[in-house]
Image (cartoon, rainbow, N blue to C red; front, side, top):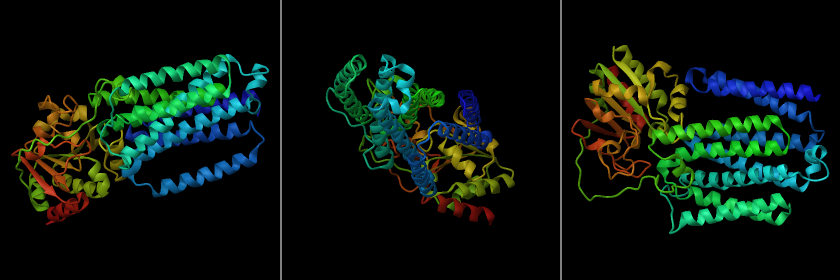
Length: 464
C-alpha cells in the first residue's frame, strides 16, 4: 500500500474507534459500538501487515494469540471479568516494554533510523524512556491487581513505614536513569530504569485496598493506553498513537468519575493511597446485633403485594448466575402491575458497567435499568427494595458514620425504602470487609441462600 493509502486506512480505523467509544456509552448502542471497534481494529491490523514482509513470525503470533484469546473468552465467567481485564492490561504493559527494548536494540528493523539518520534521535530516546517506564509500571501493577481481584492475594492494603518516601525516592532515581539514557544511550541506565519501574508498579498497587480496586483497574487501563501511545511515537505509527491516546484519555476520565462515585481523591489512588484512599478495613466492635430473617415465600408475598419494587444487583448475583432468574421474576411482577426497576451503582460487581452487561445478557429491558444518581431520590417512595448479592454499595454507614472507612462514598440509598429484602448466603462482610448496618434495620428481612435458588423459589411462590 502507498503511504497515502495507509494514512487513509488509519484515519478510517481511528474514526471507527471513536464511534466505538461513543456506542459503548449506552447499553442500547453497546453492540453497535463493539462492532465499530472490531471493524476498526481489523482495518488497523490488516493495514499494518501491509507494511512488513516478515509474514512467518507474524502469522505464528496471530495464530497463537488468537487461539489463546478464544480459549480464554470461551472459558471465562462473568464474575472473573475484573481480574481478566487486569490481566489483559498487564500484557499491554509487557508488550510496550518488549517493543521498546527491541526498538532500541535494532532501530533499523523498525524503520526509525531510516527517517532519523544513523542513530536514535534524542526525541526517540525520550519516547522510549516514557513508554518503557509506563509499560513496566502497568505490567507489574496489573499483576498485583489481578492477584487482589482473583483472591490470590489479600484485598487489604499492604503498607510499611515510610512507603511513600521509598516510592518517591525510587521515582526520582528512575527518572534520573531515564534522563541518563536519553542523553547518552546505553543498556545499563535503560535496564536499571526498567527494573525500578517494575518494582514501582508493585509498590504503587500493594497499598491500595480491595474497596478501591475498581478505580485501580480503570487507572491501569489508562496507563496501558499511554504506554501504547508512547511506543507509537517511537515506531512512527500514527494508528498506535491514536488508539493509545483514546484508551489513555478515556481510562483517565473513567477513573476520575469512579473516584467521585467512591469519594476517593484521584491523586491519592494513583499515588498508591497517599494521604488517604486507604480502602476499607473491618473493625469488630464486639457488639452483638440482631437481625430478622425470612423465607423466599415471605419475600414473594411482600413483593407481590407492593406497588413498586427496586432491585439492587451485586457481585453475589453474578457469582450465582442469577441474572436470567431475576429477569423472569421481574416479568412476573410487571405482569401483576408492579413497577420494577434495577438500581445500578457505578462500581457494582467490582468493575464499571459489570452489572449493566450482566443484565443486558439476560435481556433485561434497558428502560428498567437506572443509574444511582437518577434513582436515589425514588427509594423513599418505594414499597420494597430487593438487595441481591450487593453489600458495600448499600451500606448506610457511608452516610451516617464519620468513623467508617467508606464515609462519604455515594451509595444506593436502599435504607430509605419502606421494606428491605436482602438475599445473602450468610451475614459475612462484603468485599470491603465491613459489616452493613442495613442488615439490622427493623424494616429489613434477610433471606439466606444462593441467589439463584432463592429467586427461583420466589418465582414458584409468585406463580401459586
